[in-house]
Length: 439
Image (tube, rainbow, N blue to C red; front, side, top):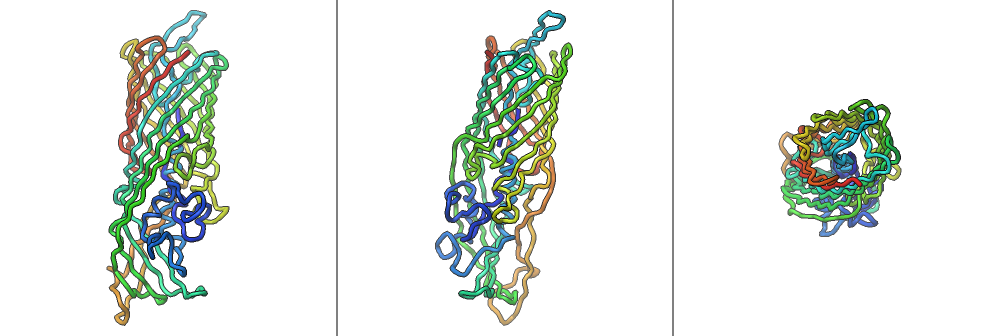
């Protein structure tokens, strides 16, 4: 059923004229990638009319870089766990005391049944969905706070001349159109294997607006400001194959109507993570699945996801500083109601836990004032600054859909996904349509 590719995207997104960890937004393979769209819209990359700072300036390491990291990790983590269509092919046949019994409940849409597709049976399905993201860590993407610091040195020395603090608001847009191909083959009556291949179209844009700067000398006194900076816009698109998922499932126990199975999802980092098409990390999710067959069929799935390191999660912004993408408990609980032999209504609650995840925070930098220098001190002598903290949270989604069996083993489906809580990367209600057939 699950897990492909966005909690949010920008772990190592901003970079100075030197490489930012493994990602350099000014040169090299990342320069023209979507992972660098947001920093290129900020004022610091527009100083002196060029992408980069003055010859004696550089970005400080814990301001905008940290804010961008929280967004990057969010996208990389959540995108890797977007709900996926399953191999629930439709009506199933269960043999009890050698007598076949057909259950016309067509099954769930986003959760896999414990029952397999059957020995040497082949299931093929295709789905299309659109994720339009609106918030991250409780901040609207249309009003995302950014703040950063750049330092000027005396030529040829490490002596600090001044620091410039810039605060601005990013109006960001982030959307994923996702197309999935699902193939499942029954190795035996108790074991099947699935491959899920996503093809994605990602679009990202950001406008830096309401940009205000203060320049502070080496004595921490405001010498210039506040002064406004012009707005800037940066955008881009990317498309291609995302992270492919391989799933193996085996039935552990089966009764007259209920079954319990164990499965393992393996996410392969085949997607271009710098273009937000993938997570940049391997993912492993062992799970246990329960389902009951009847006119009303409850089902449940519990698992735990582990991820390897990703270049999108580099909190120290240094070479060799890549960390594991956040993972955690995964749970899916729901039920399906067979209205008649041709139509089934499916409802689900899907939860994804993210442990020790960077989150976007807003703080301040304190400065001094002096009547002998130019400029005006900000209110309370504090300039806004963005940074990150570490948090653990769970994202919950509700899912409601319909499956229709117009002929034989052909099933059409339509579904809506609604995020219940405003944590991590949040999207507006997500539509999904699909078609499947079991041979």
